[in-house]
Image 1 (cartoon, rainbow, N blue to C red):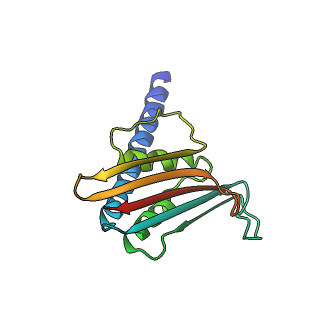
Image 2 (cartoon, one colour):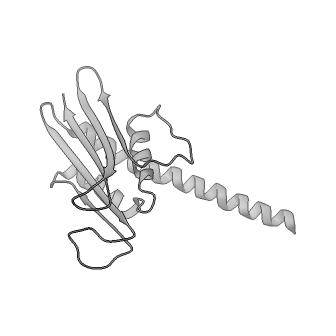
Length: 156
């Protein structure tokens, strides 16, 4: 009887890890398409905002959690925002950053229990001849409240 319970728990943990991997894959495709779509001498930005424990400063409605995503009407960015709005973490919003970095900088890994409270990094994505300079920042947003993940791409 005890062994059966352990098997069930291990099965659930395995399923959870598998679903997390699938969720990350679901982010990577639209995120990579977004970065690759930015043309030379063009800049595109996505801002994903999360607030845990209260609503945003500009919304008087009470809330335990809130999220919003700004894509500036750019079609490839809309797919990334759709993913974040459906699957983005609010309470542990640093997990969105870890997934974003892992998608675009495939050799970068974070420890599974690493918690991000802020981050600023930049790197090149693509080839020497065509790609984008990607800047990812994550920090508190004093004006809006909550946290803000910014993905900025300067195409070259």
